[in-house]
Image 1 (cartoon, each protein chain N blue to C red):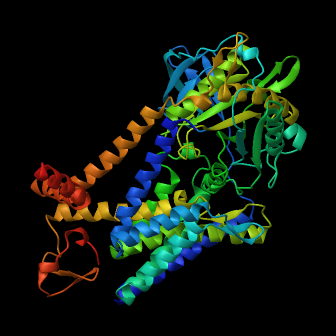
Image 2: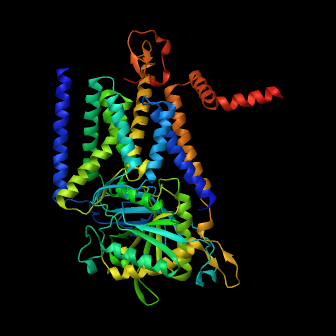
Image 3: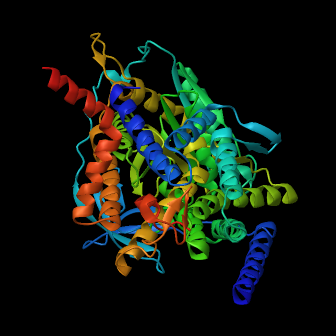
Amino acid sequence: MKNKRKAYVLMMVALLLLMGITVYADTSGFEHSRKGYYTVFEQGTDKEIFATSWEVDVGDKYHSTDNKMYEVVEVDRDGKKAYAKFVEDVKMPEIDEIFVTETIQTARREKHVALYFSHNAESYVPTDGTDSKPGRGGIVEVGEAFKKGFEKYGVKATVDTTSHEPHDANSYVRSRRTAIRLLQKGPDAIFDIHRDAIPKEHYITTVNETPAAKIRIILGRRNQNLKANEELARKVKAISDKTYPGFVRDIFYARGNYNQDLAPRVLLFEFGTHEHTRERAENSAVIFAEIVTKALYGGTTAAGERVQGEQQSSEGTGSGLTWLFVIAGLGGLAYLLLSTGGREMFSKVRGFAKREFGSFLARRNKRDGEK
Amino acid sequence: MPVGFIILVFVSVLILLGVAHRVLDRLRLTDGGALAVIAAMLVGTFIPDIGITRNVAVNVGGAIIPVALAVYLFIRAGTAKERTRAVVAALAAGAAVYALSKVLPAGPEENQFMNYYYLYAIIGGGIAYLLGRSRRSAFIAGIMAIVLSDLAQAVVNWYTGSPGRTVFGGAGAFDATVIAGVFAVVLAEFVGETREKIQGGTEKKDMAFERGEFVQGKDNKQRNGGDRNEE
């Protein structure tokens, strides 16, 4: 008994110490920052494929500017290098040439998207003077430009500027709450707006003689909505490829879920990187709004033919449902095997069916009996 | 939203709530009681957050209902020992989650094994299980781990003048708070069943299950297989 009490006291002291250290770390301005960035090379040829400030893991996938799929097979964490192998050419959705040049006004009801910022301190050094401005970073202004772009095409955009500071491992635990609040407003899609942290050479571009920043789409690999979100991401890239080739530079399939498990059509966009001006990202946001609007809501060809947008598509549902059933089934089976095993398992399953569906089965048996 | 996506969302929610229901069912709640709690959490998710200060708010479904349930389980705990264990486990798990949020990498992609919600559930469930091998303590610790770490962050934000907003249980039934509570019990259950399997059967086969608890030396005809590992 005495020993147990001693153990409790020791535990509490250790915890208070732990708390003290972390509070100190917090108040003294310690914050996670992505140090450096990864360069990913093609296995065998050593040709550079892409660079990213995201952590790269074996199994991550990368959809390149020229629509080739790669899979990361080796990561050198100390050297910040990774190697990926070519997997296949990506079959992109077919986009009607005429449709993409048309202005669309086809949806019957209100068109609505929502925007939020998991890391709303992210900023652009040349314009904002720093790469991180707690409370309202430059990235929020990019979101506002994105909203204006949507409004130009008749799409209502709700912008939530909630701060999820500090930028730590719980940023997404906090931003999940914002995402749920936004989903309750019934948007057709919700987007988490970010910027990258790699050299600007990877991102700067010119669109119709306007200085702009390229855009990267991030997909979380760990959720049931991956296929549905991938459909939208590919459609967005396909439209961009037709209208402004290279503007949507790539799609990165990263570990994590980035709140994409909450619903289909939840995407994360990177608008350029911290090293260029914010104006470039704002210009991109306006251009990108047109592309996303077309991907979501479709349009009409010059001949009056309706082109379907992702808003009407259910592609990716089957794969998501299979994913869910497999996970739930495996979990249930593992538990049954563990807790019972052998004959007891069958008896438990029978008992469960009898208990849960008893009244239903009884009614049926009675009906059969009457017949 | 197209029908396919509605089905996808519906099934996702149903599976989560199904797991939650099975878990609550094992926490001294009746079938109906468990269902009522699930319904309350779901409805509470859609009730607007209650503002406390400019940067602090609380959600009914994600915080008030789960915390109320944790408090109920705490009050109904059989012994003072179990209550002490529950408090220690909750504090320990809260501190561990807060510390981990500072130490773990900020990007979910940098976490090698799982989403943080499940990691936090493992911490809550693990600590509670080590201390008392109790599902109820695991649930209390899982819920309070997230609530207490949020509370610590809110205090730090207030102290440092950080603009970060804290909404306790803001994602309602889908919040890390609920996920950690539910999966902490799932973990305790898995660990308990594994231990039992390894040792070749339950240690409590000669005990009787009465009013949600095992009692020594009674006639064992009321034995309930589902709670063999409960303290």
